[in-house]
Length: 257
Image (cartoon, rainbow, N blue to C red; front, side, top):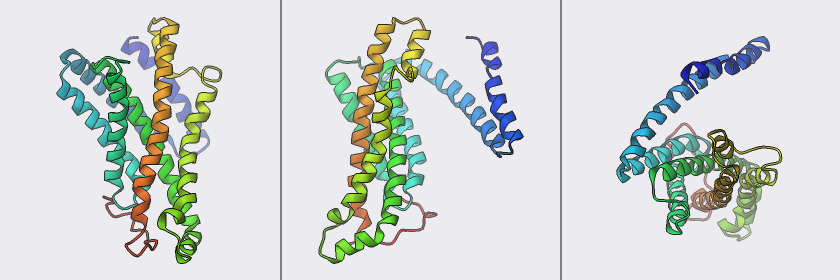
């Protein structure tokens, strides 16, 4: 695909712009900004990855993963601003996800320890982990607010913080995992995944493309479970003080770290 051909695809940006203008949705500016940012970011990443793949230097691979984790943390932390130390909790969660998944992939020689495998897979997993973190934090904070009186009642009756927060925690973990599980139930029937479709378009053997896609699906299941559980169990203790009382929510405008 040439840049000229790609430019013609901007008609797919023009359609939502016309619709938002016609219906006064007020999303025109955001749509333009999102389009411009995606073009700049993806082109920049494309040239960077070309350099990294050709160099095969572990330092560059490490820096790319660090960049992914930093960007994911910056985006996800906004939803957990009311949770003390949410920044380092997210960083630790993403690092564990990366170490566990890449450790298994490389350790069992499922994929080679090469940049062209490590970076794309890391990007998919960290990105998915970021979305799951946002879903979890959004639901968890809402559950805490909704069940504040119930939580304080359990504490007043002698319950531990873990017992008091158990229902909210489990509900939030399940809610963040459900989209991943449900989407995999209809994979191949309702949708053809992007990685598989991209390989087929590039001329790869469809069966080989399916095998790689299944690998990613299995990794996403692990990511869904590990992300929500680790982030949940890192977060809930900071909701209580040394007297086992539910602490007041800090100002969301303050730095959560």
